[in-house]
Image 1 (cartoon, chains in turn brown, green, yellow, blue):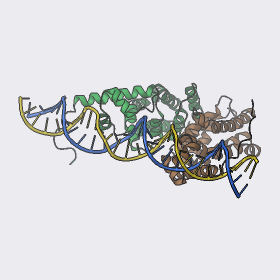
Image 2: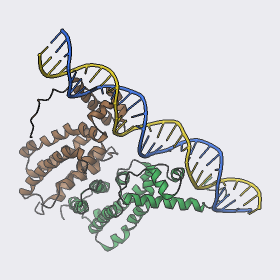
Image 3: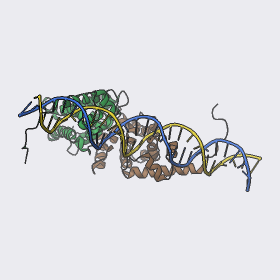
Image 4: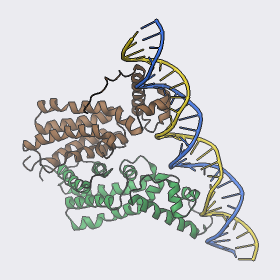
Length: 193
Length: 193
DNA sequence: TGTTAAGCGGAGGATTCCTCCGCATATACA
DNA sequence: TGTATATGCGGAGGAATCCTCCGCTTAACA
C-alpha cells in the first residue's frame, strides 16, 4: 500500500511551460510593486486562461508561496557555508543579514513574510519549516559555544526582522533592518559577551 | 479667512449614535477574531445602512483606525507616569510591555499594526505620530542618561514588536513578545551596561 | 410650526475570487 | 504512424465584497 500501482505518465510539456510562465509573470509583477495585482491579470499576461492558473495554484497564497519557495530554499542552503566560515555568532549575524538582503532583492511581499514567520497557513509550511530549521541550527551552535543565551526563541528573531521589513516604506528601511540585526544579536548574547 | 462664518449647527444626535454603534460593533468583531468581516455585515449588526457606514468611515482602514485611535492615545498618555516612576531604561521597558499588552488585550489586528508602524497610509498618520512621539521621548531620555546607544531608531523597536504580534498565532506569542522586549532593550544598551 | 441642511439607506455598478465542465492535445503504446 | 485516453486548457459565470450615488427622512434652529 505504500507506493505501488502504475508508473505515472510523464507530465505534459505545455503544462510545465504554462506553470513557468505564470511564476515568471507573478514574480515580475511582485518585484515591480504590483502587490495587489488581480490573478486574472497574471493569467492574461502569461497568455493562459484563468482556469489554468487556478489549477496550478489553487489560490493567491499558493502562488505567492511558489514564487518565493526557490529563493528561500537557497537561503537555507547558505547555512553550512556560513557556519564553516565564521564563528557561531558571526555566522548567525551573517545569515540574518542575508535574510534581509533577500527580502530587499526579491521585494518579498507582506503576505509572504507573514505566512512564513507567522505561519498558521499550511501553505507556507514547507518554506516556513526550512527557514526555521536554518536559524534553529545556527542558534543552537551559538548557544552551545556559550556566546548566546539559551532562552531566546530563534523564530522570534525572524519575526522581528520580518516586522521591520513589512511595508518597507522609507528608503532607509534596509539599513534599519541591518541595525536591528545587530541589536537582536547583542541582546541575545550571554552576559559574558 | 481662518475660521469665520456661521456658528455651525450642532451635529445630529442620530448621527453620533450611529457612529458609536458602528465603532462598538467593529471593535467587538475584531476582538472576536472576525478580522475579515464584511463591512456590510458590520452595518447590518449596527442596525444602519451601508451608506451610513461609508459616510462615517470612507473605507475599511478608516474604520480600523477609528477603532484603535482611543486606545492608542491612552497608551501615549501613560508615558509621563512611567517616566516619573522608573529610571529611563526601565520606563522604556515598561512602556514596550504595555504596548504588547494592548495588542493582546485589544486583539489589535494586522492591518492596524502595519498601518501604525509601517505608516505610509495617511489615515494612520495621527496614531502613528502619537506612538512615535511616545517612544521617541522615552528613548531620548534613556540615551541622555547614558544607558542607551544613540544609534538606535526607536521606530525600529516598535516595528520589531509589531512583527512578532502580527498574526499572533501560537498561544505563547505574548510571552514571546515580552522576551523580545528584553532582547531589544539589552541590545540597545551602551557597552557600559 | 416651518425651513433647511445634515444624515439615512439600499439599489446596483465594478472588481475580484474561484468553480465548473466541455473541449483540445501531448503522451504512451501497438 | 495511428489510436486511445488521461492530462491539461480556458473562459463563462456565480458569489462575495467594496464603494457610489441620490432621493427620502428627520433633527436642529428660529
